[in-house]
Image 1 (cartoon, rainbow over the protein chains, first blue to last red):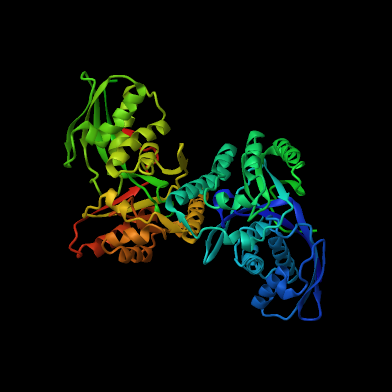
Image 2 (cartoon, rainbow over the protein chains, first blue to last red):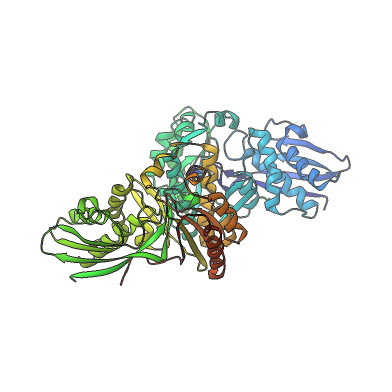
Length: 306
Length: 306
């Protein structure tokens, strides 16, 4: 195989009670990437359309991730990477993760799959380290594995795939203001109260249970975050109004996607998701802030070949 | 119905990654309680054998729990409570929870079950408040419901029952030194690092998942506690030696039971549990500390009628 075209999906990380450990994969938003072998023994980003991002391989998350993979394989095959960037950088729905995950997925396929998808996660995390200063896995893991990913442990890395209740839908509002992950991380307190932490892990345990039992109401009750959301939500215009609005319209849960500024609403079924999306549309339309709205199923397979 | 005799089981709370939210119910250790209607319109503790505990109803956890229940019912029926106390107070395996849970279970049955088991939890928690200064639910919930209980939320109270993989066994070592729950709580730091909290909730999420998928190895890997155990384990003689010993003998996981001094080892199957129990027996026999050892299945039903 000489080349491969893939769809690299957007993802929602830091899912409320699961800061740094829980993410899910979206279906309707993602980049397209074309990865080709070259004869130059180096990795090149030959084209990025749609966004102004660095073409130097060592400054581009896809380049860094692929080089991490190739260096583990210890071979001198080069690759050209073209990215049709549809996920806006700094949006909070895993823009860098999509590029990293898509690139290592494609290169691994072209090379005859020397690595499992689980193993690819750590290569893709090198891209996250470049993008945000932190090698978190809760975007790249669901981008590669699909569905819901839970990071049990970072050292050693262990990621679990959790079941996806069929009727879950995600609505994403992306206010077009940029919050860099690095900045968004810097405002988080590095010490938290034990009491809040106990509430958080009670909710995360319950959320995991609810995925297995398909208890949609429990999914909703568990999607709480009293640790990061109270701080980061300040950066997001009309966050509290949106929370009230989507709850009123029957969404199961609501929170910050990744490090923002996007927010997500988790809904049961297409009908409710559409209702919630329309309510957000109406509310945000007169707010003098440009925005994008997405409605998506949970993508169960992650990066896929086009 | 005029009277009821019940078995009120011991429980393991604060299960490693699930401090304050996760507990399980034991089968082979527990109190026996006889609860009878009386004509005095008051609750009396008429006999406690085996341990020196207060007979005044307002100083006894069973009395306090039953009075909480009766006050909710707003009736003036009185009860006599006899307790054959087999779980040592201060042992860390839910001695007070067994008395509270057994008493409210029996009174509720005698009164024609006005409350669900879930509802009984909050009455039994009044006993915990008396015993430890903290109305935690991770002993009384599994004592009432059986199996593994997860406290999603304390306010409002919501407790989930989690599945019990059939082969799980628990070995309990109770070194006969007394640590009061109150004292053991007072040494815990009220602020923790976000990093440790993230590890903790990653592990708790994984533990819950592993119960559903019956992944015994993952159960073992998830049973970690970097928040409370490093502090409380100092109070438990030979804690680190025991951890190494039971790991060497194939236990899945190991940690402090409740607030100690008991420790638990979770094992797969009777054969391994017996091996682990024997290894602890041999190790602790020459340590000049009296101790008790228990081996138990997970009790799936909680308090039961005898």
